[in-house]
Amino acid sequence: MTAPRTVVLAATETGRRLAVDLAVHLDGEHRTGRPRDALAAAWSRADALVLVMATGAAVRLVAPHLSDKRTDPAVVCVDDAGRFAVSLCGGHEGGANDLADRIAAHLRAAPVVTTASEAAGLPSLGSLGEHFGVRAEGDLAAVGGHVLAGGSVRVERDLAWPLGPIPAPVTDDPAAPLLRVGDRLAPETTPNVSYRPPSLVIGIGSSRGAPAAEVGDLIDRALADAGLSPLAVHTAVTVDLKADEPGINQAVAARGWSIVHLTSDTLAAVDVPNPSETVRAAVGTPSVAEAAALHLGGELLVPKRRSPMATVAVARRPARGRLALVSLGPGADDLTAPRAAAELAAAEVVVGFGPYVDQAARWTSRGAVMERFGLGQEVERADRAVALARAGHAVALVGSGDVGVYAMASPTLERAGDDIDVVVVPGVTAALAASALLGAPFGHDHCSISLSDLMTPWELIEERVEAAARGDLAIAFYNPRSAGRDWQLSRALEILMRHRDPGTPVGVVRDAERPDQAVTVTTLGGLDVDAVQMTTLVLVGSSRTRMVAGRMVTPRGYRSEAP
Image 1: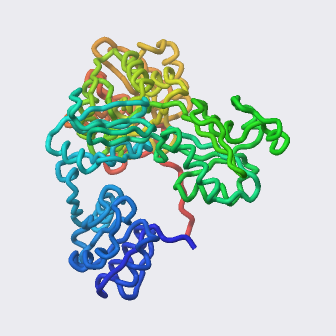
Image 2: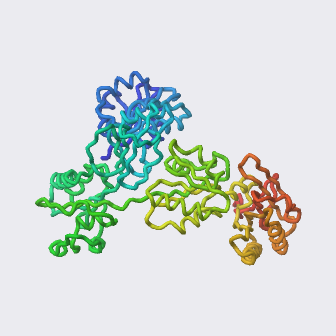
Image 3: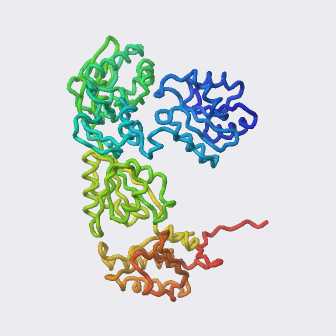
């Protein structure tokens, strides 16, 4: 039976009622009985312990079990009244800080986090790079204390891998503590922290019945002899014929790695330096270990090594920068998605139109670099963001509304190849924000049309307006009017008037969800074109749209059954 990730204990009857609620919320297990016995049974098996009791009692319970902050479970203490969630142990390494925040949000309580970096408003050195699968080891406490005191650090990147913004001034002073990004072990002469990107792929082959100890020992020796850190292992890989091989599975699981199984045909297509016809005859591919290690490309660091019943090879996969296309939403901070905030917090460089970069700044971390571009520099923004990602950085290219709607995702993705990781973070579009302010004008079929003819011929725009009018779609007009384009909206309204009643409801929303927001409801025949600006959206209802209590509503067509 798999051990629960989170175990919740309580010392009193009042606390037990709260513990049951927390166990359900955290998808954990509420354990009863003597808290001392229940904690002892759960300590080495659970990822996190939530103790509903006084902190003094919690401290006395956990003290005999504490061993190493890197392996101890996270411990959060919650008072019986549910007023506070205290990160007691394992704040960074175990995740207790995040768990305390989650519990506090559920209980509407106050999270109590006392680790030094959080108290100073800085990311911990141990969490730096976590967003990109990077793991840290070294003198975290010493170097972290140096950073908290305002000290500078040196940074060396053996591999061009995203890390995140460095929360300290960077210097060339050889006496300064060192932050190194790489997968190789090296003798250190100064306090240092090594950041291990998930760069290594372990290829494994074995005879049937190979002992887990033999497979594991071969892996460990291969890494150690090559001076490679086990923390930099991305995954272990073998042929699918070995998917049920206990020795391989147990050795990989004991080291906390995931395992991938590839077909013989897939492995046979990988060029390797040491093919074997004997292996081909046995499993249908001339190589298992080397081909498995190299299946993502890159460099073979350790050619296949053998023990009596196993074979291992190690490769370094190509380094990949990260480009996040981040949607900020229409303007209000609380309409920016948490995922967007997380990408911005992890970004080393934030690129975008100046006002959008300024808007994004509140979610960025100390050390992030802001690169602001002006209007009309869309191509330059896209080129710069892609180039930075190809250099191994974590880049966020920001846009308002949804970055994929009349925004920067399209030109950027046209330039981004498969040599970088790209993620697109969706957002609330300007049209959706305006629709919500008006009511429900998009309750049925609808479309969005930009009236800007800077990139689209006007003849094609007219055809689209005509098609939307004939199709009786509700329409959101983006870019309806500007100082240099003052006739397109009037022409679009003329087309619509041939198909819709002049009394069709129309919503005019300027600067949706921004400080100068203005919302007006009028009709197709009564719309004052001169009142429309570049930052305005015009939402035209369909033939079924009507006003209900001052709100635009396009019926979906649901029918209630007769009683």
